[in-house]
Image (cartoon, rainbow, N blue to C red; front, side):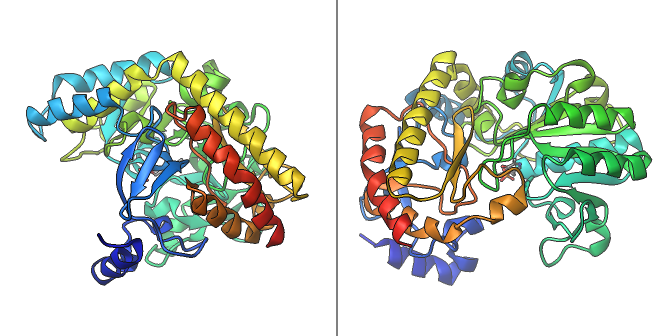
Length: 431
Ligand code: PMP
């Protein structure tokens, strides 16, 4: 049996940094990442045979718990019929119909393979529909790693973006304007000055890639109204929140309709049930601008892959109201114990939460934007994280990530988390 450390060393000789997605390298918490070999329910098992209660849930998809037997069976059955055809299959429309039943503004849905592709295509569609180039995004929001979205704010209120990575042309970054989250005045000013150039605003339906930051009041509806008043569109990115915070995603919690509704929505994670599948959907007139009906091109060899569709469709069919009640209960138990433990140690903290999705910030008062998120005692997280890991609980390896529960977090799994928290709070206090 190889240890995690041996596996990491070997991986580093074959794969850049030893990982295929950067956060997995434990860069912000230090130490050796666990190499996972199995996952079942609320648990993952690493290569050393160690069982961990999991609060990452594959970054969201495992809403029913890992490897739910009915999902695995559906995947095995689909695989037995063929792994990929590059042709249409009957189940694709069933998945689209399921999403359209759940999410009112989705009249048509196109399946892709990753959230990155979904947002990239939604933006191309918005530009194609409006004939405008400028995109508005919020500081600290993540929408995947396509060039125009992997950008950073400059200094100032609403600024043309700077490349957020090497390899992104400044000219591409400059087609995006970055605005502080929850800042209505900045949006109003930007639209007053440049409204006729703006194709769309893209927003995480609830910000969850800088830890969780809740939209203030009717902020999402405000964005839709402002965009629409200037002939622009609102893209609501529900890759992370979709079918997780509510059976109908963040839209299900907010239920804005008419002029307040988002024009396009993007999905990922839960919609694929753990397989590579994502989607974009929205108003029929916009969606039908996509090829082959319209002039906006998009395609994919593995789009609508039958094995992935089987996993997604089965997951959504099993994600009943009872599942969402269990998710909420798990979040209630964990957030309650988390705040008790940190309060007992006198550690300044704020828990932000939407549905069952939550995160902790080591500061007084819930952050409202990225600057406030950064203004926290982030140094408390690595010792907190490692104390939880030593006690058998796998947390997201960064304070700037949300925690993900599953419907399989039963009382035993929750008990292990609750028991681990006081020690982790002591480690955070001692940092
Ligand atoms: N949008 C949001 C809101 C996300 O959270 C993510 C992934 N964390 C993406 C887009 C990109 O999805 P993917 O990693 O599947 O490309």
